[in-house]
Length: 275
Image 1 (cartoon, rainbow, N blue to C red):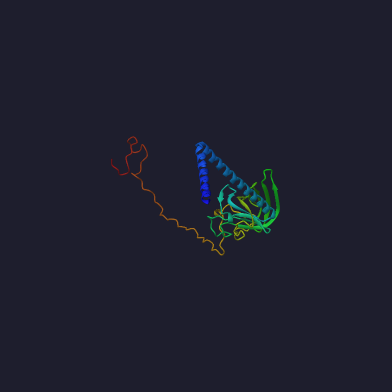
Image 2 (cartoon, rainbow, N blue to C red):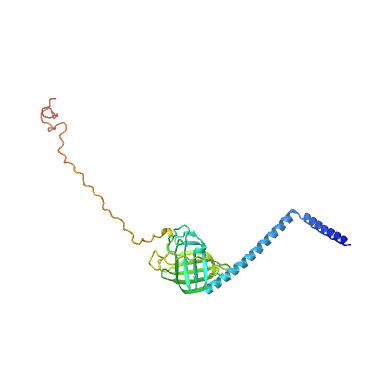
């Protein structure tokens, strides 16, 4: 009896698979293509929904980080005042606020590591003043603050894009026109992967005039105890002394005045000359 039940179960399974195969065979080529497109669109819509949900979560976390005063904007590119854009490493190029200290840091991969921060750029720290935060009608978050330190005096303007944690930081020094724009992603400071170099701007003692457009345009720091360049007097050659030239002897003798010696003004030649 048990074998009969097993046989009937196998038979029913075979019949179900045969029916499915027959129904699939009945679908035309256009119907199969339409079904494939519908499945693909559904998959894309699901992925887009999941991405929007993730972006929304990142956006909320970024807002909370700004409100708590503990965040870092990791830059993927830096645009200078002349319009030139440099693509950079996010972990070493950032602006941040944490524990009441604001930081602006740059580090260029192709520059000399013998730079003020040891990373090919500068690291500037300062206190925070005048924090303001608002939202526009499109949902973008605008955040600004002042940073004041021994080597920096600037205002930073940040725009956090709506429903995302992508952001732009515009750093404007208060005593110079060397502005920079940093585009990247804003994270809570605890989850950011930033690496801070040595703070200070050792190549300039002027507070506020702190940012050079690019390390290749920076003047190298003066060497301590450097020997001044040797100044050699110009070489003076004595003038060449030539003996005075005497009177040039007459060529072909002296021509007598016209009309003298007869001949109707024919030159008879020098004295003693016999034609």
